[in-house]
Image (cartoon, rainbow, N blue to C red; front, top):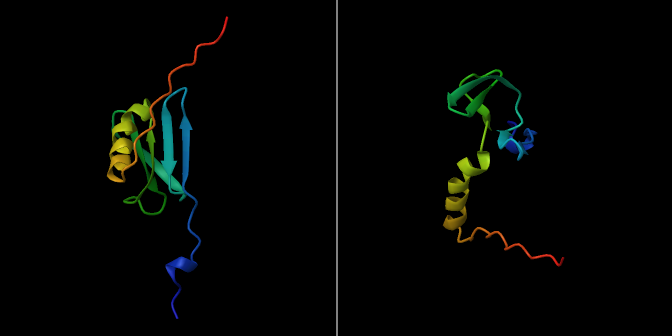
Length: 93
């Protein structure tokens, strides 16, 4: 009997966010080779062995602003409202 894809160990996906710089790295855990800038501030990384397969990406600046419309659309699709920032609570002097 053939080996099932369920039997295979899949790489662990990763996401790293650096809020001070607004940089987001996301990859599917596969070893990657070269990266290519495909738009201003957006780099894609290709599988080391299959250069036509994208395995990661990097948003090099302002990732939160870039992704916000997409995240909000996904949340809206499932009826989830994005949390609103709470008003600052005044401190006593």
